[in-house]
Image 1 (cartoon, one colour):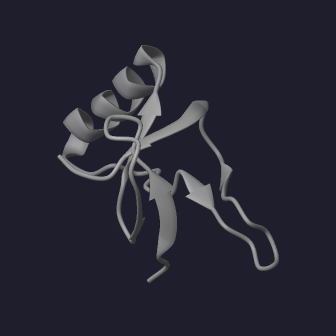
Image 2: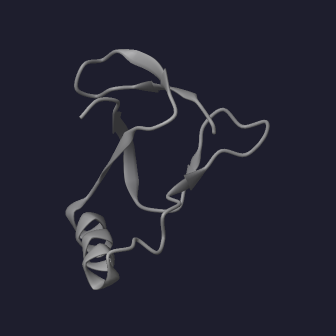
Image 3: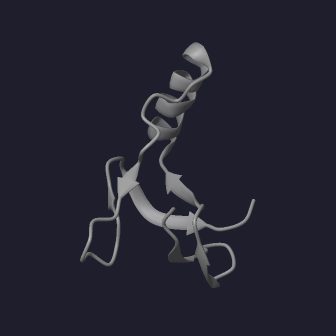
Length: 71
């Protein structure tokens, strides 16, 4: 499991976490929600990948990169 320093847009605090929420626009949210409603499983679970030697993940969905670390 990968842990990264993530700054929460809500608190401004940076924490090292292995799970975080990522802000997406409404169209992306609805597409993922529809996929979940279809059969109860999100088919495209991977939304980003951090490659060796890179500092930040590459996201495969449209996002601002803004995150939250608590919910």
